[in-house]
Image (cartoon, rainbow, N blue to C red; front, side):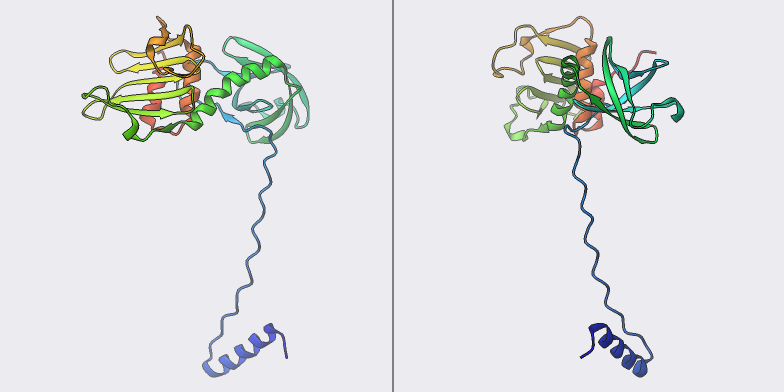
Length: 266
């Protein structure tokens, strides 16, 4: 008995002799899907791209000319920086560089190994991260993690304290709550974001205010209460920057996210 391919060929010749038409040949089985390579990073990267107003930039300063490059994403052991200069001015892939990590007014030494490049973006590994580095980076990426966890609570469980407004509640863990109030026309009138014992409040008639808890309790009970917070006379840019990272990492409608990004000064 011949092979299957020989049998199909014979049938095809018979069919063509009778009808003058060909017989479709069975398709070869599809190749198995290519397995995705496992993620090699120890820590997931946290996106730091914040549209519009930026309260404190996160940057890398590279020798020998102190060129400044914004950090696009960040983890405890790595980062990606954006280079707008010519490639020739950047360290070679595989090389190690002693750089400065700048957040607002603070600067920390950090040793980087350049491990890959995609266009204007360079991936770097942090070599022997210091205690200061770990503390500062943890403060930066913690709001990003909260933002990714932020989810809306079912409206049936949200207490409505004022008949004139409809309240919504988003929660991103035991130390993160976002409350929104809309008027009868569905227009946003007020928002309060509580996180890490900090508060950013927006009111339609007043704009943004920030505050910090003066004496936080040891439990999360009563956490989301503005009475616990000392509001600043001016916007605390450090608190606002953390809030911006949080909402930028969350799945929120643009109109809600925009509340935390005031128009830049002219």
